[in-house]
Amino acid sequence: MYEFFIARRLYGNPESTERVSRPAVLIAMTGIAVGLTVMIIAVAIVVGFKQQVRSKIVGVGADIRLSNLEDTRSFETFPVATSDSLLSVLRADPQIGYVQRYTTKPGIVKTDEAFQGVILKGVGQEYDISFLRQHLQEGEMPAFTDTIASNAVLISRTLADKLRLHTGDRIYTYFFTDEVRARRLTVKGIYQTHLAEYDNAFLITDIYTVNRLYGWAPEQASGLELQVRDERQLPAVTERLAVQFNRVTDRYGQSYLVRNVEQLHPQLFEWLRFLDTNVWVILVLMLGVAGFTMISGLLILILERTRLIGLLKALGACNASIRRIFLWFSAFLIGKGMFW
Image 1 (cartoon, rainbow, N blue to C red):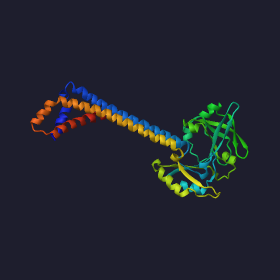
Image 2: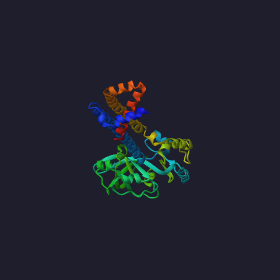
Image 3: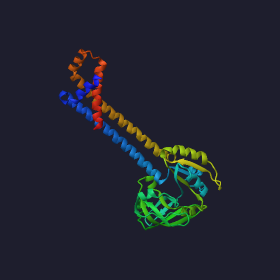
Image 4: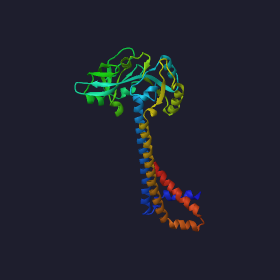
């Protein structure tokens, strides 16, 4: 395969490179190296950003939510039965990592200087606090329970700054059902997730306190949050659970509804998918730039090798063989540029 041999001799002998072609070759290799670097950085930034946003959305909620069918029609939540038998069935599923109960109740926080609309979220002792602990900035994690009111609450840094609150402060919260109900809670910790939709609204306390505001039975809650072991299986697990639970009625006459995180936040995930378009635009542009510099350098090299081409033609080489020589040469340049 003499084409490869000649191309390697041309590439491996720097003295054989003319004064004009050598800078062109260096520019071509630099263009390839810079182009590939930009591609890697662009892909890494976008993929990392999407993963970080998704992990935070899942951290404040979960991959899948099993709630009341009526929740889609009202801002208030409605109860569903979360009996031990249901929890056991879900926890026995090999594709589900953990299951946790939650109850939410909209209300108002009032201090001497300001007031703010909030959503009080109650969780039980099985709640995975690793995400909140990771984003805890001040104070400590309360002991969440479903048997006694702790009167302790986690508040976001955003709400704490708006209401001028610190750990240890007591706040008055008001909730509206048939009558106005007030609860005095103590700020045990301050967290910050940097998700504005969550930080601007949610207070975290025990599920016993929130269930008492509704007057629900101990086994009732707003729903269940489920974490899948492999996020790639999320659509399949969601579909399987939807077939199993959607519109199934519990002992209190309430119907279940299964939705995953992408169905709960469609606009956000559509925006994340739109970021892929930016990556493709960057990749196409950098491929164009790298290809243009490579082709320019190769054309200059061919023009300066007219004597070599004439000699090879005189010795009987065909056009295809000569093309393969320069294609091998360009492959060496691309390989070195990609290596750097």
